[in-house]
Length: 440
Image (tube, rainbow, N blue to C red; front, side, top):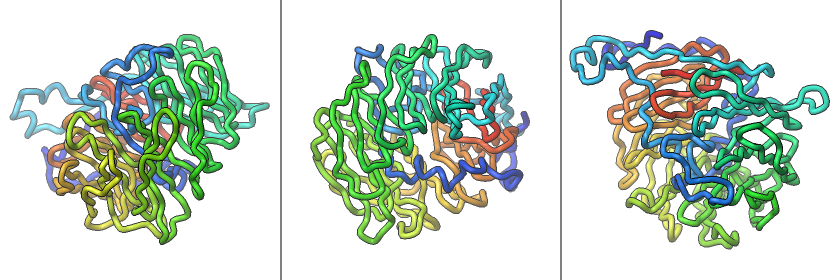
């Protein structure tokens, strides 16, 4: 596939507007991911050994890569044009090329964000189904060639899988969370939440964290499905996707988008006791709370959402231990959506199509990319040196992480694309027509 490269032609604009993006699953319904008060924290290997070994370095086992939703795989490279490696002349003179290694199409015509562990990719059907005539499905696909390994039916549409050890955890619109055998798809247990989860679950240190539409965060044992504790202090909007790091659960509330604001809570991972509460945002999106291995990773990042009543492009940086504000990043032009955090740089998309990069230590802007029309559709994802943007025009854009220059775009997915999952030199991309693409 030929790619338009900013390094080859700085005055050439990306294509856009070719198709309607994921009708029925587009920006308005991504609030479960972008605007549902999700929290992000980066701890890669603190899962309980009762359900499996530590996470392999190069994997994408959960929504947004890790329990903290950073959207960043520090050991993957992503697709790269091998002609250009180490050759400065080619890097200047030729556009980058990537190709589709394989594709897999769901019979249901819908597919959600894939997760990857070892040599297998897992993905659920996104759409709601009639459980009597057309149950939802979880797919297990061979990572090397895209052939199917197994399919497991759940009562209704399923979202992202979480893979820990030999168990696959998936939530369904029938309000159940299922634990499946990773090798066969056989059900091990299910937990019936009172209402359907609004977004994605996470697994951390032998525990499954389940946000629910009834304003409660449910926490269950990953081996048995038995409930451990629940957090019920949220008064409006329900908890968003949790983020877990440093033995702390960070959860935000989308609320009613009122001037009174929404909250970000830090909870004790063992008991659910509140450690601190931050009330500044008027509407929260996906907070990010990486671990304390560096100064930047002791910070929780939360952007104000795209809805009415939200601020104009604000990202808050909050001390992960105390809950005090460290700094705020103000996007110059528009309301912000989801973030990805890659070492010392955060990437944030906006409602008007701009992408911004800023320092996670100071909040200083590093670059902005403003060549797309219409909103960024899903949270960015990243590897070292590259950030990937799924846009509402239906295309996937790869931007240079240091400069913001467009490296290439992928426009071969009818129905538009979701945020890619990144392992090795490959981007695994779900599309609106129910097809998964392995782009390398």
